[in-house]
Length: 557
Image (cartoon, rainbow, N blue to C red):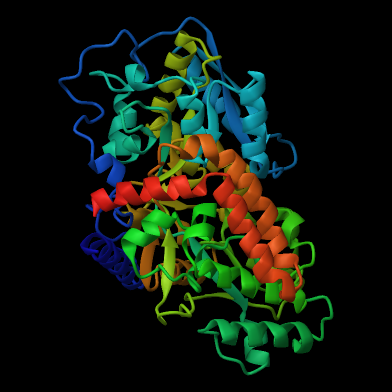
């Protein structure tokens, strides 16, 4: 509990100092704050005696610090998420940034060939490629259990010989640090993947149409009941007189689930339940009530009848056309340029419209507010055994280059004078957000593999830079990040129990099927359907995972 209170204090202090700092010209904040201070310490990493990059580690035959070895025209295949957002004149594999990557890597004899994968099909595509032996040499996922499962089955490389030796991957070790690198390790200290460092760990926002709240003389909802009444009035009596309004969409469900959780106030129990997973559905009795609420919204016509097939593009379309009244989405999603500057587009279509983020509502059990947060790591990159030894060495050199100023910094921020200027504190401040959005922002987060949400030295740098990327909406950015850290912070875990990798695929299939059934069934069949769901999870082995997680966290606490 002391750890969570300390982390929460850091989050609160960071946000307060940032809001105060934005009132002055010098808004960069303290320079000594680490970029992951908002994250809880990783418990798995804390158990290790052996640290990556130990100066006493033996020399290795592999050289993976960028510039330390000249390769002989080695080609590596690298996965690249495709969001179908390339501007006119560019494609996801033919653009100035792909060319820049190859210009820089050609200096050390490496050619980079990108393999595109639709962003929201990444797990299915990854499973197909791994099964067929066609996965790229650097394969990506946000699901650590899948990456570890492939390793445990003998399908991917142990990266220890390429990373942990003296003089290896020096840029990577300096940028990521042990806390992030160790997330990709097994309990036996094998390194099955390279995890990207998050610039900030805030995770999710609730967003609502403020103009409709004002027009109906309603206050910001603070409870589940108030939210339901607000959504019903938005759909049936909205001030614009629209008949096509969708009351709510939950692209993310992290904070919504916490409105009903019975475990949210207990740190150890939350770590066991694993939050937004099927384990949480099974272990946290309050999640039944979350699904009952979703079922109520669905049956009362406050959710899109086909919500479970909704693509992100269609979800965004509902926002920018003024159809959607309330939603949970990624932090700062309302004005984030990466996600399409949604509020800006909405106001171009409906000038009187406004969207605001709101703090998390009160948990139905204890009346407290809870906000979800990421761990220190983001996506994980791993190397299938179909890659040769030399190719893996080149892949690690590529990721090491990503951790340099000429690598990840340029890919994310662009070039000084063209895309940004440094302020007095050395923070890159965007010059022309409109130019950047079509020149680099559309690809920057997907091509930069060792940092999630950007290449930043501190949280404060991230905040200052991000607010300047949304001209006219700087206050919205500040408010979004502030609201995303209200209340008790619940951090995602990175621990994977021994049985999870072998059981996760079947459990996820059941989860995806029954989550839809539980929400779309008639109310009188809800409890029977949810009981059936829990039974299917038990049959698939979820109880084993719960027992393993319980044993582990009992030892930690």
